[in-house]
Image (cartoon, rainbow, N blue to C red; front, side, top):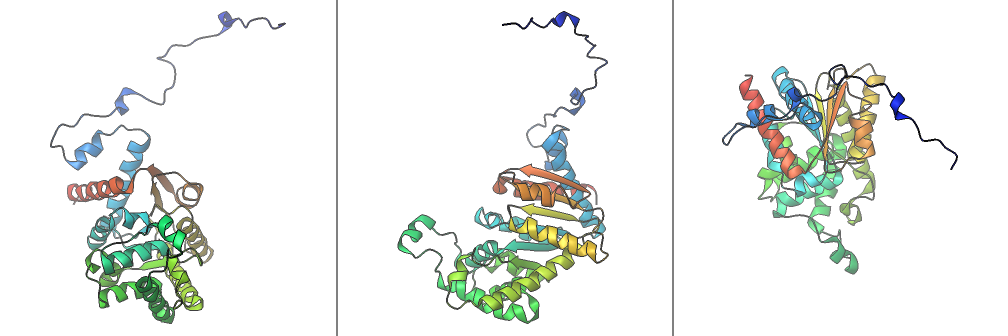
Length: 312
């Protein structure tokens, strides 16, 4: 070995008191006691990383509600499958959420919950015998909604009205039905061939394509109106981040700046498209929070309601 050991005795040091630091004790967490309110718990979080991001999201949602700004939630299918529909519906009822967007899978689970009170097949078992994805009632509902939706109302509204008008004993927990009842936009964005209903013999691809394209146009109008509003992507890794990005560019191309936008992504895992297309490129400010929907969404609701109560 020809290298001479480095002489660390020549290294210049400095005092910790003169050194810039990213973390200090003033940002440490507090210790709320038993019986603390949701707001007290939020205030006790460290002033760092996800603690600050959650505060920002809560403040942005509450501010949008107070100022009458738009709040669009994009919902992946697991929002319904983890039992969180009542959280979203309640925030719609209270005027916090003003519009929904969802891929076809979310709409499928929402309809099946409304009709049967259950959803989500055992894919492995059904795939082996070729029965997976062949549920008759769901396919027929989408076929009917596509035909109605292509004539001006869009796929999401047509499905919502179908749930409200049909024999759906659990319509009270349907997000599409809630949106239709409240006259709020709820759009369904179909990627052909990705959803079980596309196998159904009654489904007309042309009608479905026309209805979902109309929903894309409706969603673009919603996004164009999100100046100083909020977009929250919950559990969609690909389809909704792409829809959102195209809607933003269409709005800005036609003179709608979508200025002052706050965006957030909530999911168990961090994916490229939500990180770049939702919280990175389009908004003035974006945050990315990882966590289980069944914990994060009920918690977010409680924190926003307490923030609104405190600042009313």
